[in-house]
Each structure stands twice: as structure tokens, then as C-alpha cells.
Amino acid sequence: MSEISIIVPVYNAVAYLRKSLDSIVNQSYRDIEFIFVDDGSCDDSLAILKEYEAADKRVTVLHQENRGAGAARNYGMSVAGGKYLLFLDCDDIFETSMVEKMHSRAETDDTDVLVCRSDLFDCATGERSDASWSVRREYLPPQEVFASTDIRKNFFEVFVWWPWDKLYRKKFLDEVNLRFQELSSTNDLFFVCAIVLMAKRISVLDEVLVHHRTGDTNSISNSREKSWDNFLCALEALETFLRNKGLYDRFRRDFINYVLNFSLWHLDTLTGDSYCCLYDALRNTWFKKFGVASQNKEFWYNSNSYNRMREIMEKDLTHDLLDKINELKRSYAGMTAEKEKLTEKNEKYAEEITQLNEKYTGEITRLNKKYAEENSFLAAERDNLISVNSALVNSRSFRIGRGITYLPRKLRDTFLK
Image (cartoon, rainbow, N blue to C red; front, top):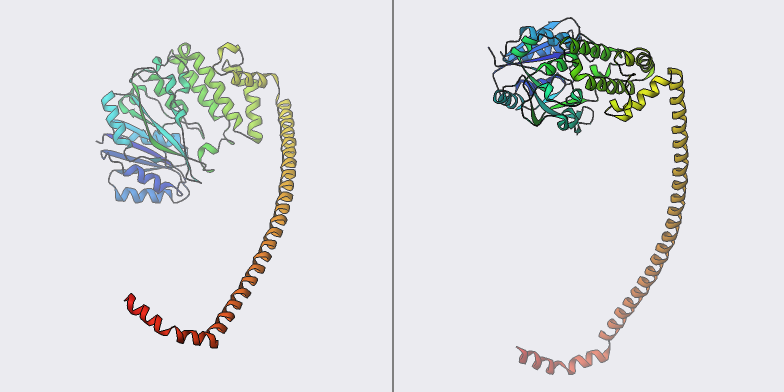
């Protein structure tokens, strides 16, 4: 029986699979079972997984028809035997010390859930960026180990509800008996959030151990245009869970604030028909269903979110789109005016550069001519001096003088020796 089970759902990940898996199987901590679940890939991902299975006896490869990452994680969880579980993604990169550090901390703090930090890297440029917002320390209680109910404000904004930056005690997961939702997107929100809500011992390892890939146009997180309402299903399940566990009143204000912020984020990152569908759904159904529309201004942690919600409730989709069109027109007009200003500046600078070029080109030409004339004069002077010197050396007077001064020069040279 391994100490830790690492479950990795895989779907059409050939482009980056090996690099990610290498960071997983080469962990410094060795007592691990790796459960790779192929979710019906139609590329060579399954063949690559089989290579790792053949090379490392700790690797088990499972296969299912395409049902999504949530179903794949559930399948892996059903066969996992470790004391702790990690749900890692097949496109991220993990520090090779991640498991060792998290296991050590989980054992020391006796945690149900341990959270580490992460950063982001763009798969196109390779550049990394900060993700300190994934753990909001300003909302955490002062003690190192805490329960969800110890977080006094904004519980749902303390962490991001993705699964791969958290180590879970399997015994605790078995007791809570929850599963990932089988949704096309946002299939992890309900499971992860509900687990942390139930946890009595939570701790944070304040170190970046995960490098989360962004910029992949094929990733599940970029398929929300087709599954624009999945996050609402997740929020609905989470509200039901809170009510069933008697936690809704305790977390009511935090939850409704989170519903609004999360809904606005989805709305602002969607386009086309998906935007229209979500706008109407929020305005006509969900803001009322979740109690968002009935709260006064003092209820909200973020006044900007409240103002945006009021605009949505007061304007139907047609007027919202007209406002967006007018905003785009104003933006276009502003950019056009700015372009004209820049064009005028460029023309002015081009004219100044031309004038400077003409000025300095003429000055350079004048100086070159002056120096050429001076060089010509000096060359003539040199030639004249050479001619005079040659005439002097070859003259009769010079030869007579050399003969008369021969003896004195000889005596001088002898004396100097």
C-alpha cells in the first residue's frame, strides 16, 4: 500500500503530456502510486501513458470513454489506496519536491486538507506570472491549522477551487463521501469547495509548488463557450450542500457575494451567443434564485460588483448590447482620434528628421570639402619640402660644406664615444 495516490485525468494531451508526467513521476518522495486515467483520448495520449506504465511499476493506467475530467478523477479515486490523495492535471508542471514537502507538512499538522501556492506560465511564451491571489492570506485565521468555520469573512474567495494545489487525507474523503460533478467545465468547484467546507484541519504551505499552464486554446477552461451554464449547476449543487449540512446561514453572505463575483467573471470572459444566454439567465433567473438581486448595497464586499449587478437587473439584453455597441463606437472614435494625433506627430517628427538630415548632410559635405582642401594644401607643402630638401642635398654648396665639416664631425663623434 502506497502512502500517497496521485490521480491524473488525461485527454488529448500529447503536446505537453511527457513534460508534465516527468515532473510527476520524478518526485523526490518515492512511496507513491500513480493512477493515470485516459478519458477517451483520440490522439496518442493513451500510448504515452502505457509507456510510463511499462517503465515504472508504480504507474497504473485506466481507460474510460470520454466523460470529462470529473468522471476520470472519480474513477481514479475509486481504486486509490493511499493515505493521501493528490489530483494533478496533465498539462501543469510540478516541482519535484512538491509531494515530499506536502506530505511532511500534512503529517506534522495532521491535516484533512493541505493547500500550497502556485504560479502561472504561458505555454506560448514560457513566461511566468504571479498567482498569489490563489491563496488570500488576508482572510485566513491567525492559527496555522484551522477549520472552515474559523474563516470569519469571504470564505469562498480564500482559495481558488481547483483540485491540484491541495493534498487530501483519504480517510477524510471517504467519510465525507463526495464525488466530482460530471460537467464539461467547472466540474471541480463543488467537490473541492465542499471538501474544504467540511474539513476540521486545514493548513497552508506558503510555497509555490505548482506551475499552472495558461494560454492553451484547447484546454477545458477554454471550452466554456459551449458549457456557459455549467458553473451555475456547480453553484446550485454547492448551495444545496450548504443547506443540507446546516452551513448555509453561517456562510450565506460569503456565498452570495461569491455567486455574484463568479457570475460576473464568467459573463465578462464570454462572447457571442454564450454571453447573451448567460446575461439573460442571470437577469431573469439566477440572480433572483440565489438571492443576489434582493440584497442592499451594504451587503456586498465589492461595490463595483453590486453596481454591475444593478445595471444587469435594470437593463435587458437589447439595451446592454446597445450600450456595448455605443461603448465600442466611443472607444473606436477615441482610438481613431488618437491615431490621427499620432499620425500628425509622426509626420512632424519625419519632417524634423528630414530637416536635420539636410542640415547635417550639408554641414558634413562642407566639412569634408574643407578637410579635402586642407589635405590637398598640406600634401602640396609636403611635396614642396621634399623637393627643396632634395635640391639642397644634391647642391654643390651642400657637398663642399659636408667636406669642410668632415674632420670636426669626426672629432666630435670620437669625443662622444
